[in-house]
Amino acid sequence: MGKISVVINTYNEEKKIRNTLESVKGFDEIIICDMYSEDRTCDIAKEYGAKVVMHKKEEICEPARNFAISNTLYEWVLVVDADELITNELKNFLYEFIKNPGNYTAIKIPRFTYYFGEPIELRYPDYNIRFFKKGIGSYPPYVHSTVEIKEGEIYTIDRKRRELAIVHKQERSISQLLQTLDKYTSLEVEKLKKKNAKINLWIHSYKSLFLIFEKFFLKGGYKNGIKGFVVCTIEYGIYKFVVGCKYWEYLNSQNKKT
Image 1: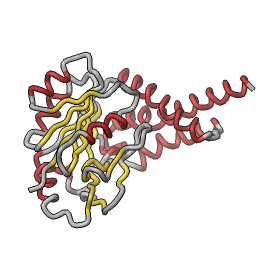
Image 2 (image 1 turned 180 degrees about the horizontal axis):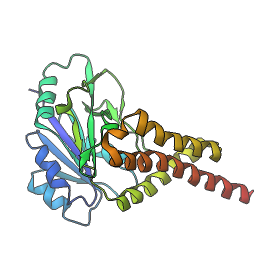
Image 3 (image 1 turned 135 degrees about the vertical axis):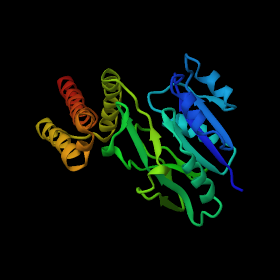
Image 4 (image 1 turned 60 degrees about the vertical axis):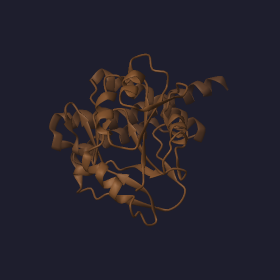
C-alpha cells in the first residue's frame, strides 16, 4: 500500500496547529517546517509525533514548502496550511486513489474558506494542487504561487464532492485582514517590479470597483449576505486597488530620481 507524507509550514501557529494536526492523524508521516516560531508551535507538533524541520523566516512560504517536501520519506505528498483541516473522507479518498493512480501524478482539491464563522460560497471550489508525487512538484519562489507539476496528468476532484474539500478556517478580524492585505499587496508589487509592468491608475481603480460588483453579484458573494460583501470588498476590490496604488507610488518615486 502506498504511503503519504503531510507537509505543514508554520510560524507562530499555536492557536491553530492543534486542530490541523488532529485532522491529519492517520497519515504515514507529518512534517512541520517551522520558521523559528516564538510560541509553542513546535512543542505542540512534537506532541503529535510530527517531525519538525527548521527553515529561516521569509516573507513567503514557498521556499520553506520546497524544503519541507525535500525532507519527506514517502512517494506521495499532501501540502496543508496551518489553518486548514483535512476531512476523513478526503484522507480515505487519497489512500484509495494511490492504489491505482494510472498516469495521474497530482490532484486538484477543492477548498472551503471560512470567514466570520461560515464558509464563503464565493471562494468555492478554489481548486489547489495540494497532492502530488514527490519529485514532480515544486513551488516557484513568489507569493501565492501554485505548485508546478513536471510530468503526468492532474486529476480534478468533482466540485460536487464537497465532503472531499479542504476546510480553510481563515478566522480573522477585520484588523487582521487589513494587516494581511498590507503584507501581501507589497509582495504583489515586487512581482510587478520584476515584470517592469505599466499601470494606468484610473483604469486600475475602475477595474477594482468592477471586481467588487462581479464577485458579489455575478460570482455568488451575495449568497453570504453582508459577510459576502465584506469579503468581496476587502479581499478582491480593495486588495487590487491597493496593489495598484502601491505600484503607482513606486513608479512615481522612480521618475523623481531620473
